Image 1 (tube, rainbow, N blue to C red):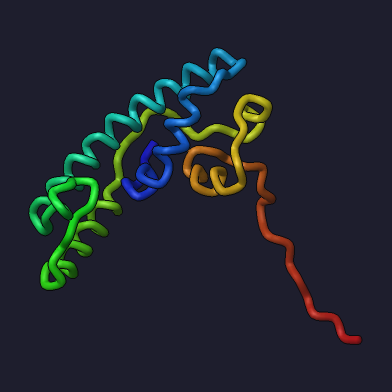
Image 2 (cartoon, rainbow, N blue to C red):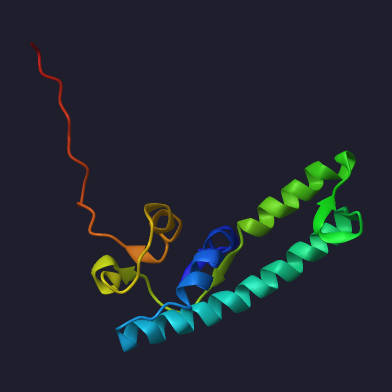
Length: 136
């Protein structure tokens, strides 16, 4: 399935947590394992490119590569390239899961569901209800 690097970047911590959970369904466990390995490989490439951008435009803060200083005159160009990188679509293994496939198997917070909207298909109504004004 195709996702953006932004979606992957936002999701990777959740996927890292899920990979260590015990899941009753062997099929779901297998599918999540394959998805995780695929996502992890793409994330590694993403980090490599991110680090090369940081090295090109900035310097490590106090010699520590976990924080970077980017000069103001280079910041606009760096941000443009960063945004461009985040918008790149990549292919990860698998297809989205239906909520009922993971129900009782995984515990996710509402925030995690929102972040993983590319991976989990909900039972949403076909169209939103229509509202109409009534006079009093």
